[in-house]
Image (cartoon, rainbow over all chains, first blue to last red; front, side, top):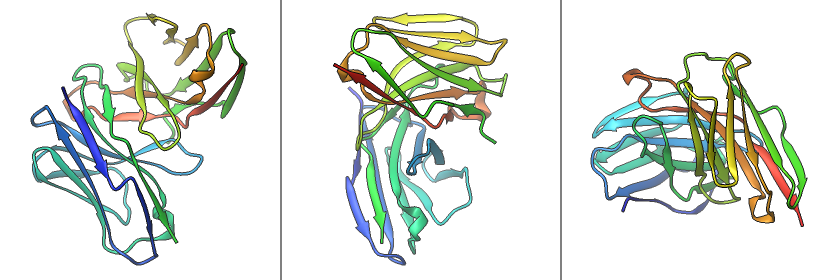
Length: 113
Length: 115
């Protein structure tokens, strides 16, 4: 069966510090992978998606970057965090090719102080 | 440009009654619509979807209705249970390869079901 894991679950970081959130998928190959963010009081905003190793597309200009060093690994990074980067970050992979169903990880809560 | 909107931030319902969550969209190119349920500090879980060529899809207590002319969809939960209390997101997908399966989400509606 397919599973998706992301870590760390909770992170408290000072402004200006770096960030690395990791996501791995098991039980599938060459998945489409996505990073979403849920900011307080807002919906889920797509940040990045990847259709293969080394292929990253950004949806919104921001302070974050993403990388896909391996087929089933997706990393969200920042060199210097801003207060506005606080939020709940979600990794997902596309399980339903036609329906578009995404399967989400457990999420990572980032608080920037 | 908010292509998918959930205009009700919250909804409160008595246990056993019907919960009706609503969603409006502007892009007539969407070919699939999905509903997700999310508990605090967890990732969203898929509930039910509907193709744009259908007007109704049912799965147990959950039914999704699509009104294409009004660009409106709704999720009915009958009967509502306290465990249904969560944030509900509607989402939409465009067809074709260039969409890459990306989903556009609404802002979410907090459903509270009182015992």
